Image (cartoon, rainbow, N blue to C red):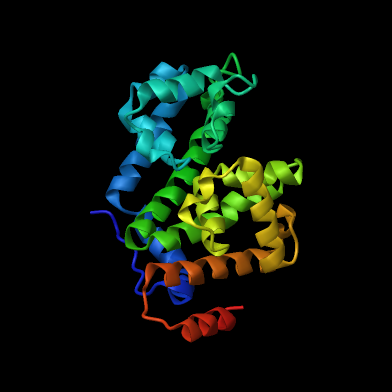
Length: 264
């Protein structure tokens, strides 16, 4: 049986507990027989994968490959995955470049079936890197089964740090956030935006994100979140607003205001 993470509280208290116990809980999770079997199988087989067909025809291999990018739900969409891999990423018309969810783009880049004559599966450390990402995200999924907010909070630093490091315009970075479902959820919740917000024109969404960022963090640029203090502020605001929205406690307007003040 796979180890199930323990998260006894929600909100900021739950996050503090998870941070204190995460190392031990993650180690217990990764030591479970199921995870160990999948990891070992991937390491043994991935070096023999030379085409997208080799990958998608092996469900066990594909499960780990997709899981490393948080794309587990696409395990049955073999034609779609094969198309993304075979197209590659070098042409603006490639499918991965057209999708708003940029996890597919990273997936296609890393495997390299459509970009190189020899795919990156042939690189000696490819299996180790993919497996490390797989274990990290599978633990996040296990945490999410107990508390979805904690799963999102765990992914925040990794996902946002990748964006802040990119040599791109600020608008491009915001659009990347908007195209990343976990990050988008965090920002929309932290900014108190309604569920229908995503139906607005993209330029209107961008303007709103920038305005809200200035309102809550004092600046409109994405690069500010490279600072640990700003990242922590974003995480706390997300967790507090998410807990309130979920109705985890019967709170009056005054209590809500007090909760927000106590966390900032």
